[in-house]
Length: 112
Length: 110
Image (cartoon, rainbow over all chains, first blue to last red; front, top):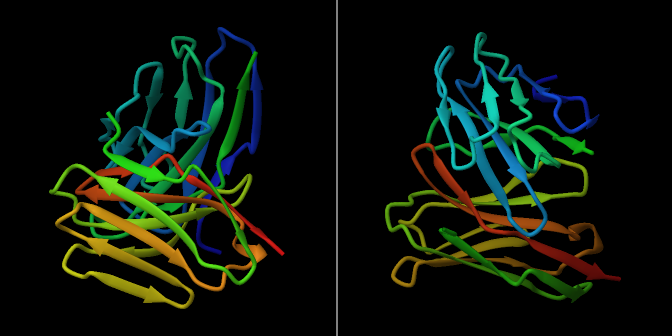
């Protein structure tokens, strides 16, 4: 069953703690992306990766970090430096620039 | 800066009616314009997409109209159904840069 798996679906953390969101894909897509979704603001790009061991900052990378050690995996760490981390986080993949993004079902992170 | 402006923010349509969502973009280099549909608690899913060399694309009840000179494109949902109730996002893309509109929450009343 091909697709993008994000886990966990819901995540709760205390302020000041780092937290890592998982994204795994078996679509064999080269490019992977992390977006943040807030009500009324659409989707904003955090980081993206075109190939293994390479990634680029998006518009709102501050307070986040990523790694791309395997083609299938692109975990996102929300650090304590992120001022407003509570949001819905979406992972996506893409074969190339001329193809659509495929999204996972997201992780809702709540930090209190 | 918001490179893709979407309106309206919310839309209520009667079953069987036509839903129309509009988007405007700024960067003339964008060359791919997808629409995504998102249900609560799920990720967005591609609905339909168009490239700027085409003025209209139809897939079933969904049609994209594209006006390159005005830098605008719109989604028309014909014969809207309660199952179409969702949030819709337009987007515009060039290379790795895909910009999303803020979304439109569509409610189709039975």
